[in-house]
Length: 422
Image (cartoon, rainbow, N blue to C red; front, side, top):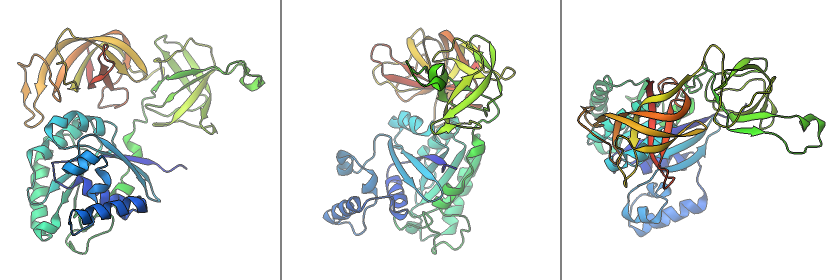
């Protein structure tokens, strides 16, 4: 069985120690190369710092290193014998809300760092809210810099109580608190001797063991077709009539013999074979990429959807959605025309209405808002030129999410979460 992959996003205010924490995870799990470590040790010594500055491992861009800040979403990879990890390191400032949305949209888990000396700040609340908005299933609040408050249990307890009270307003499925010192490595990879009052796991132990398989939607079969495979002029008699539909399973479990329906035609057929990268597979489930072969010849192309006859996504051209606007050149306004990319289907769309802008700090809805600027989140209605096969984002993040593209520049200008169809 292949090792599973945990994708997690880190968020925190400036100087909460995100880069040091990631550096510590990479360093203590021995996922860095000796030459990288030597370079970091040299730079730390040149700066006159008394510790090896592990933050330098992740602040990879030289300009960032010189300024000591992290700006874009940086992806890091490391592995332990139990699991592989992809880290989306997102910046903390409010003007980078879009970067946080990008990093957290595919995450299984989010780590919000809180400075033990400062406690819960506005940014901690904003990050928690965005995490729940994006339906990240697991949330870890890492209370960092415990060494600077003498590893006091009462400081940890007060922050935990305050965050728990705030979290009651949000829809958080799984919330864990871990007191750490990223600088000294307390409770990051190994349990700390400095906090005998804490009896939970270290951060890495939690990341290795958190159960993510059940977070995927295994009920609603959703298979957006990405590519039709017809081997050209093959002399192999096996492949001569081969016709397969390749894509990534977005929901449910598929097996040979299952009855399925093709959308938009509504025609039903049966799966005869499922081909994986290394040959036939007995079943396919998210997030596997496979090729389906079907019993009947149906005219299927990219952007179509394969589902179950009695469990279909909604077929809709009118969408209600929460959108994070990502363009600093144009505002999102009613009547605006854009391109929407939803699973593997691309279509043109028009903004029908802006219902409200959401203040991500206070959760207040501004219903007077007539548009959205950079990094703003709001609820809008869209009219799409052709039907999309959608689910609510809360039910399926893959079939419930989309991006908006500027037709002129081909740049991504927004990311959305479907909340309903109209």
